[in-house]
Length: 559
Image (cartoon, rainbow, N blue to C red):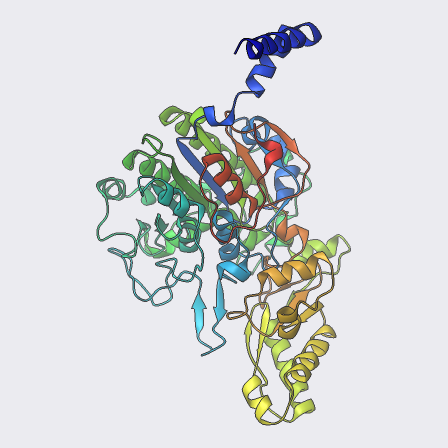
């Protein structure tokens, strides 16, 4: 043992004389074995629905100190992070966060899709075997993760702890909560008819006492008659799109600031609760319920790590209505920033941020309103899929002599009638290629991919092809995938905007990790993906990654 001790002394002395005592302290801290750093008591996952990275960058100088800015300065912030699949919508993005998987594995290919076998409409989180507790349940309501084909980080956490770890997910949207909760967690989502946060019979037979206490106070009614006004001086919104451009008079979204949240009945009702989704008040309500869950379930106070996932839905509704370039979206982000700051302060008081690992990301970004893009000299329009399908069927009928060979549109896929075409001696490849070539000539279409190309991997070696391949599921997806031109998107409306493309404005989202014992603070320039979250958390928590996780461990930010 004596030679070993001598070696350590010599090494320490060498470091002292070469670098000084401060460097020795730094060396000692950096050299501390990772196994000696306990895992977090709480993993807090925040998902902002419909938040492009570009908005965080554009408005960062106006952000407060305790919200996004705290995460960017005290944590690791990836500026080049992406939802790396070709169909960037809410359900697909939320499924990616904690499964670490792409749609071709996790099976959530859209918010809604058409079943190729029976042509029935499928909602991503529907399950007719379960109902909401104490609330009206419609056949297509989201009640369980039955359609999610893989497990999540939360499922692995519960498995590793012998089901002692608690996993709770809260969102305004059912899909926002259910797809984060995984198979063994518990999801709560807001009911538009009653304004209550409810769960389903998949998760429990009756509500815990803390949920009943929270809902007994009717917190959803406190915003009735309240107004949403600009929170910053008028000059702060210089450069945003004019209200009249993104919300033209006479349109469904033609109202301008201030917005009042009420209803025709003169009291809180379904009309009022629905309006809350396009307001900052839904996010406040969601975070308040999350805090009630934190206290009620004693999250972060157990002998094992707990996970709380909160999906904040309103920004998506605001961006759909007015676009990310609008004053409405700008102000909503500022208000959301302050709400997150307050929430993190509460978590710090209750658990301690030094014991909490915080992750913030988004499920997708957003395209600008086409009228705004046109003002900036861009080729941008809305593409009506029903008109496109009519034109496609006429073309296929002229070519093959059969009606409606394009059976259904299941965005962004066309379902073809292989059975009838085969009976008439039409080769599958001929039908696919004829449809694909016609769609390539259709206004607003940039590219198409056929089932045969996806099945054989006969795709061009480029980013868009790779993202579309990841988004295609052999049993669930359609037969010809359609990609719009940049700044175009599928819509039959006349106002507002959407998302869903493989382009950067839809895929580039915030990705932030904060937790001083585990994370190196600083802005990161490396490419990262949202699917990296699950693998990275598994590494920190020393548990098995989810079964289908394909993301990498973000080792460059780990202490």
